[in-house]
Length: 254
Image (cartoon, rainbow, N blue to C red; front, side):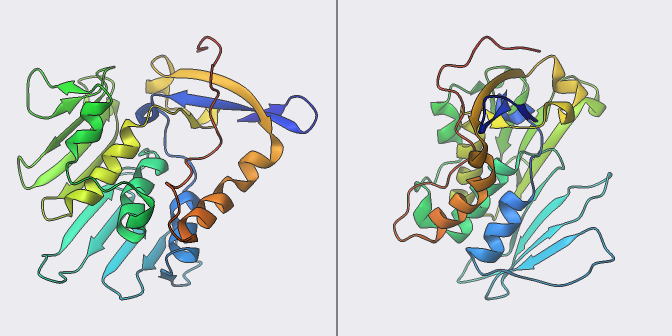
């Protein structure tokens, strides 16, 4: 993702739209959950998985790489008159969008209050789908729909063949709408995401826009720490979304 540029800076690839950018670093979610929200984790070095539980043991996050299932799973027990709920995310779901959901759960003061999951997408120019319910992104590759079969789903696919599905996120109908809105707000954000271009899905290679910018070397290294600081600061603004993208990017390259 990075190659030497000017002294003290590195060249960073930025991918847009973000639903085509790929997964990113799981630490963007797991480290703040532990350090900023107090979620505890076990110690299972022989298994390629991460399990985190909330301080009150009401919520559980499981990250378990498996090619035939959703990698990220969040379960919340029934609480205060609300039934139990779940959310899960495919392997290539951008971690920044998952963080939008998680941050709305653990640090609601850091994100705008929004009860309607559709509102951020409509504001970003998503349009009603032609052949089914829900909304479709301007490029036609991402789709969001809720309530049809007791689930809300966000799906990114680059063709009709099921193998061309990049990722899918699913939320139970009992999941708080404000948390789903946190996800759609992050999904609708037009800011591109810093990614390793070589890890971009082949299906997205000719469809994503790739720009680059030389940024200070410390920007990437400190992004996660700044995110944690903002989450733990009183009355903090919205969490950072990573390295600042170029304000006026050069023409896209493939």
